[in-house]
Length: 420
Image (cartoon, rainbow, N blue to C red; front, side):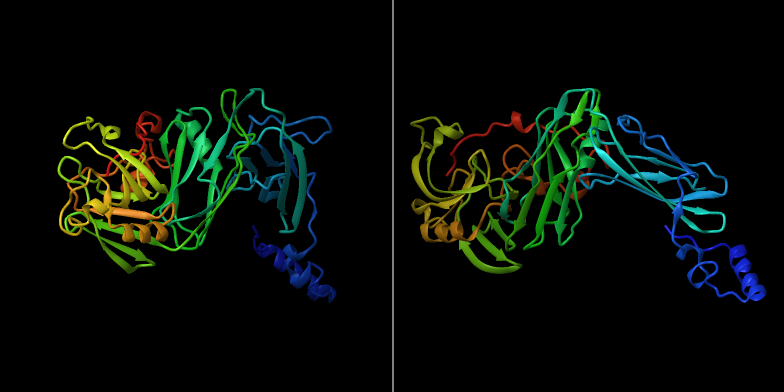
């Protein structure tokens, strides 16, 4: 950071110009000491990190930089490791001390650049390189990001799966702070702890169309807890396509499909009948299957009962792991647009189902309104993340507030093809 020259410095230069006839450059370009070439401030500052060959800094201890000369103060410190990660820090108000506020990475090489200013406002510089020692613990926390790289709809959350549980709130904060999501165009977003081993990231609103999303972890070499250190993680790049949102009104038995805010098609449909009501709320397309064999036994309907079925189903767009689809239902065409007769899925004619199948993609949004069914689960049965409002979503972040208890995705049954 730059600081204006002090008043007495300007006066001194003025007196020199008058008395000696010297140009203003006697005190630097344009009379500004800060424009002068920085001097070596090595004798003015001290580090707690070793710079001697063979010695390494303890990553468990914060980095400290102090001003040892009463006539100088620190104006700025930047510390970066070899991978480009910046070490956060805090400078005291009087400029005598800077200390890191984020943990050092283990087994890493750091370059520290310190800027100083002497009593006359002249700038000084000092650069220090040092290495940190390897972690004492051997346990690594590895992170796997999802979904796989590719193009998705604007409703697709980012997932981070950990290979071991993290329950402690302070440890969760270390992990979450190191998981980075950057989008172009930029949007506000947050991580939410689904359970001890999984986090989801989503914006406040849906992603913009044609956005680029870069996901990475800065956790490698960072101490998380006693004998637990961050491991490697493969970065992820996602893009979004057009903004496709389908809204199904169960009471009017119709679906409107929007592309970039405009209705491009309205389809007559049938949804779940009494006792098998379709879930309300926002769901994210999980995938598409040209052919699925659906059986009533998969959702608990006894074989041979009046509700039993075993049907070949085509153009099936999956919305939940428990088997809710949008699909072709030629057997119910007479009810589509007039009555709800399915076992929970959204049925439409074969030609309409084929059009829908070809139009939507993984990550696109399907919202159901005015059904008597319960609201789609936020987690464990697909991506119901958008059914939490922004306030509740942010409460699931270890960096914002206490993380509420959430059902584990592993505890939720993931059934195979089922309702029609």
